[in-house]
Amino acid sequence: MKFKLSLALLSLSTLLNAQTTGSALNQDSKLNKRGCGTVIPSAEWDAWFNQKVNAYKAKQASGKVQSMTITIPVIVHVIHGGQTIGTYPNLSPNQINSQITVLNKDFGGIGLNTFKLAATGFSAVGVANTNVSFCMAQYDPNGMPLTEAGIERVNYNTNSWTNPATPATASAFQNLMDNTIKPNTIWDPTYYFNIWISDVNSGAQLLGYATFPVATSLSGLGGGGNSQNDGIWVWSKSFGNTGTLDPTYNKGRTATHEAGHWLGLRHIGGDGNNNPAGDCNATDYCNDTPPQKGGFGTGQYGQNFGNPTYPLHANACSPNDPYGDMFMNFMDYVDDPWCYMFTPDQNTRIQTALAEGVYRNQLSASASTLCAGLPDAGFILPAQACKNETINLANQTTGAATLSYSWTSKPSTGSSFAPSNTDAHPSIHFSAVGSYTINVIASNAIGVTTYSAVIEVSDCTGLQNTSMFDREIHVIPNPSSGLVNIQSNLIKNQNIEVDVYNSLGELLIHKNAFVQNSDVIEVNMNEFANGVYSVRISNGTEKATRRLIIAK
Image (cartoon, rainbow, N blue to C red):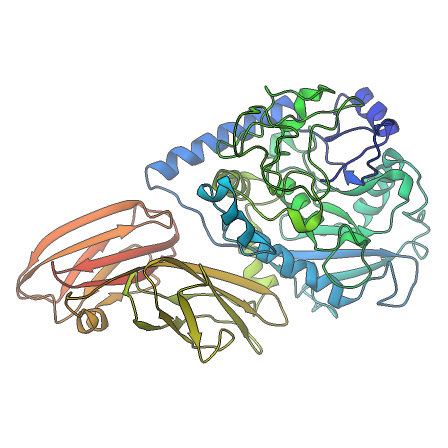
């Protein structure tokens, strides 16, 4: 991200045949950007991971799998020199926790400046909600409660290590981190997402770097993580959005970018096949990001920097494309306020990493213990409503301690919350027709999670009121391990249609039956993966929609 690497690092990379992403120091450029030191994955890694992505897409298309809501426990290793807590680089808990909030919003598709996408040609692609959330771990590897949730403070002087701000090149800094600091501080990466933060010498020109997800057989190859180094490192002055921060990198997007790598995402330009001029044959393997030069070397950066305006064609592979570069993508290199989106196809790679990565696929299970008390955001929203109707949002969020809420609606015009958008159980009124995405951010002292649902608002003048039918329909049990009963005394002796949709809106089951002398319809969900589904029940004139959770 926002990137310049030292020539020394490039030389080391060449010797190791494992090039580092981004550009070398451009002596002719006025740009002076710190950057991303993530190592480009090997061809072996690409072949393995892309095969897994294609398999995931095939399952997704057949309805056998869908995006899961994943919670990832985080431990932040604060590397300092004995400063008091809150004195740089021994960052305050407030600054550290602010980064977790940024990650949750960015991966939830509701981060800073996402509204700006509507004014671009990429609005049809949309900002993806990855259904990934991060929490501060409550316990250490020995099961002992942490004094500061999700934080381990490590004094390099006490351990007789070199000050991380001393090495003057990227290669020397990463050698210190990867061979000394990380192996001596890492917590089991099958249970924790390890994040290291420290100061760094300006000569190293680094903002952050990450390890890619791997299978057991690929551990440590081509930028992949292993049991001694898996995770991300971030410059302390670019960590979070409050506290001691560099004015260019003060919105927490460095960690978002590096977490993207950690979850399998390549730079949007595909790193240019190491061609200094940028190579449009390179790819990030995502179909919904436009081709973009991914230059590497001293000739041209090949990525975007600074604070560009839309449309931008600086690195576009199709100069006549009116949309130009997707510079607002987190996997480009622009300054923090100007990057604000992942795409749906990038989310496919994220979901694949979480399912297949040896240091990724157990994290959500460990969160049930390590993040005990984390909010589990959720609410029930009907799939349809009428213009000028007021809907009570059925908040189903759970979590320990005091919960706080922030409700939003996209678009914001045409809808309003009462008594306020911070109330635990608000109602929402729709004054205009359209499709609205309703989102809730639930937070407590442990962490933050989000949940979204879509409602279609129509002009229902002259249509039958369906509220009685909607109130009397029950889906039991919910959550279910597979067999579900649709139950109501209003479905007897009539033809009933039941449709089940996945989180992408794809129809999985259509059941049409005349219900005679019964108040139950059985639906078999055994062949479908764990996740959240939408069940729509209709008698031809009236409809009801229910949220169904499958948890086997």
